[in-house]
Image (tube, rainbow, N blue to C red; front, side):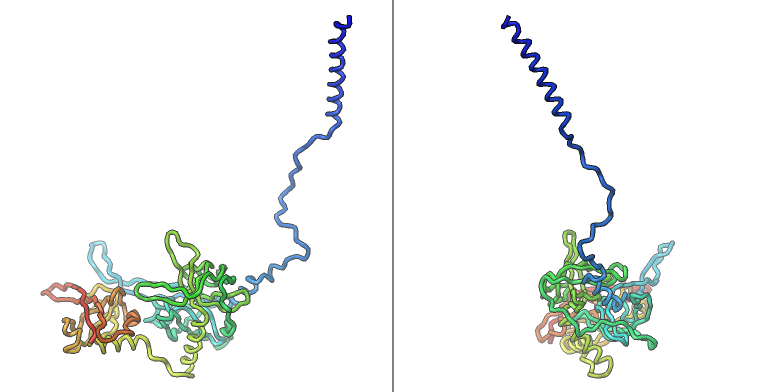
Amino acid sequence: MKIRLLPVALFILFIFASCAIDQARAQSPTNQAPALTSPQGKVSPPPGRIDISQEPIVKIVANVQPAVVNITAQETVPAYLTNQYFQLYRGNRTAQSIGSGLIISADGFVLTNAHVVAMAEKEKEVSITLSSGSKYRAEIITADDDADLALLKIEDKTVQFPYFDLSYTSPNLLGETVVALGSPADLQNSVSHGILSALHRSFAIEDHTYNNLIQTDAAINPGNSGGPLIDLNGGLVGINSAKLSGTAIENIGFAIPNDVVIPWANDAIAVAKGLKPAPVSPVAGKLEMIHKYLGLTVKTLSPDEAADRGLQINGGLLITHVEEDSPAGEAGLHENMIIVKIGNRLITDERSLPRELLQMQSGTNVRLQVIVLQDFGPLKIQRGGAVMLTAR
């Protein structure tokens, strides 16, 4: 009997244990997923609400932007086209450049890059739009290709223009926060920011080397040229000038530093107001070097003169005189030839002469590319070639 009753007792004990476990489970709390809340759309403000209007960048933009302008320069240049009968004829097209500038005086002096206004050199005027939307025609007072700076002037006797005080400058410290203002891609009143990435940078375009530039990772795009680069106190860091571009290159822009910009601007204004004599023109100096060392006298070939001669070129330097027994004369150059290239630099007018001519001395080799129009009965043939001259 005892052997037969043992399984029954174990079964009854198992039943009681199972009931106890189920009862314990029923009494214990069940873990559930947390309830979802609706998106709030904002972060709860910390103690002492942040006043966004007092952010440093917001404040300096509000202070500086009224003095930043959009600049449009354009010129009409000849173009050689064909009609529906495939006949060649001379027409015109408009070439345009867009950039930015900075008003630096209440009476309307404007600072920008020389390359921004280069296309308007013939007309000597550009179009300026203030941040408020007001539009003016500006006169080009002076443009310095070597410094890549230009001084413009707008006139309005009824207003005092908002202007940037050049006496307040940045210390230009490596790593400081900088803000670029201007009109990239003609989008006026644009702002970008970054840091001052490097000092004393140099890079070359064609045969011209730009030195002592500031490098920044603030976005600088076509149209920013001529606008200001500012620090968080609103001090001038420099004038935006160029962007390094390439397939794998981003965030490398350059500005002309304030220690170059401000003396140049002060001198240019003093000359414009008659307070000091004008310096010798770099263009005049280059032309004098060509005459002195090569025996050539040249002048800019205008589009109309090119058309009258039947030449299919957009500019160049027309040779008006060649001295006998000079390097040019011995090389066979003569009047009415047109210089279109010096070294690797394309020549469109006197202003495009390379700055290296100012360092020319006896024995310097200068490579010229010239063209000439020759008559063969009813035919006119445009021919060209290169010649190496050795300065006398």
